Length: 126
Image (cartoon, rainbow, N blue to C red; front, top):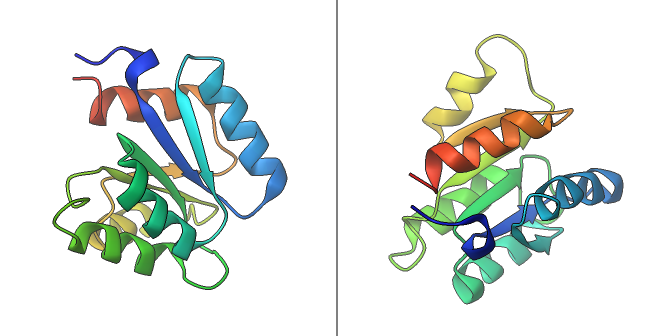
């Protein structure tokens, strides 16, 4: 079981306030937080930093979260990193559709601290 202090989380979010909020929630719980603002940055950082989990916004500049996740999951060195969708798409059926696209989890916006931490516990610390 991993300790929070040993867990590296990559937050991929282009909205400054959302990124600050999520980073604050995670750092207050002892996680090391890396940040990216575009899909291209996310793919590069996942390869370089090898985070324990990625929280990926869907709507990003340059490359959306779906494509970035496909690239992360398609790389032998990063394919086992859990990638969780962060999205305002919270209509019926959205979660199932997003999970079918290759994401390992789903967190709707506005992000709730409890849900964020539960996802980390489920996908990383077990």
